[in-house]
Length: 389
Ligand SMILES: *Cc1c(COP(=O)(O)O)cnc(C)c1O
Picture 1: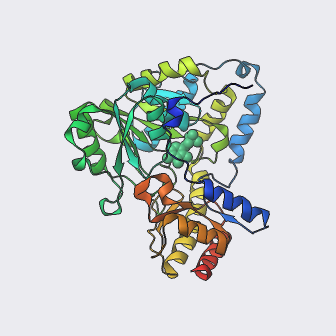
Picture 2: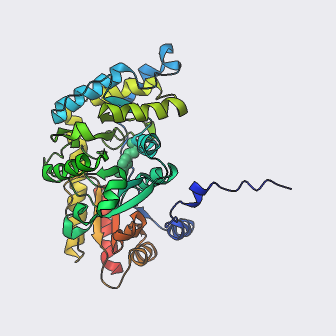
Picture 3: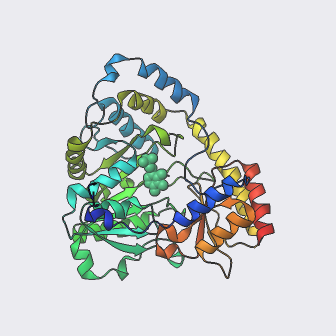
């Protein structure tokens, strides 16, 4: 005898997992001893910079950090965030009321709908996209309304195509620039348009700025919060994960509109107990890093981008050169679908990318590659792709 442990309806509402077949083929390739170039995952291959690791070692020895942390995050951490925002974006934040620590930004993104979305409320979600926007919505009982990001609109949603009744029922909108997976960066004009819609229809904007520091050619991406009116309608999620190669540390933050921050804070107070203080102390050191540390990381990614994009273009693939993020969003060659091209590259070239439709149906016809192996391997990947075509 055994219990049925039937999953709740919210789990049954999850979109189908599209990578099962690819996962299987990857396992098979590894079993066969294939020299796999895995450029499917957005996780930096380089280690966390030494000065941050050293700060963590010192912090972990302090008994005062071994207790439950404060829910909102140490004030010193939130002050470091506010200083960083002022220095990087010229945005003023009140560290006590307009900044909240997160256990990685995924945690905050996944939980924020619980604070504001009632069953049946609409949440405007981009697609293709990071899956957590729509999944957090579904877990809160909300209805995702998908805004397609199309190349002909420079991968921005077309607000004018959203029906009036949808806008009226919408409670929240997620946006993400520099964008995963398309690598598009935002413009002030685009954010202004989003703020206007939010203001007119009373919609909370949640902007995910996880990739703001991963830019090329000196073109710094903007913050949503530096645009006039943004603080009145929304918040920005940020993370130390991609900027400082700290994905495993689980620390991020959200900042902006204080009413929105306080709603998410209420949810978090009731389900988690904050971020280990030693990690917050190391994060303060990270946020105070000398810009040369980040410049070095950016130049590593920029070299990779150029080797890979030049290479793919030279063998006839249709790819744009990203201005930010470590993703290359490439059109699959004629005759292939996202999935069939991904499988073809895996079987014929030992290269693993991510099929674009896995991020949402309008991603069909694309494949995403992550610049998370060294330039030599990316050069090797290009020759193998050439041979497989
Ligand atoms: C990687 C990533 C994040 C960051 O996640 P953390 O939980 O902070 O590690 C957030 N948004 C997008 C779009 C990402 O790709």
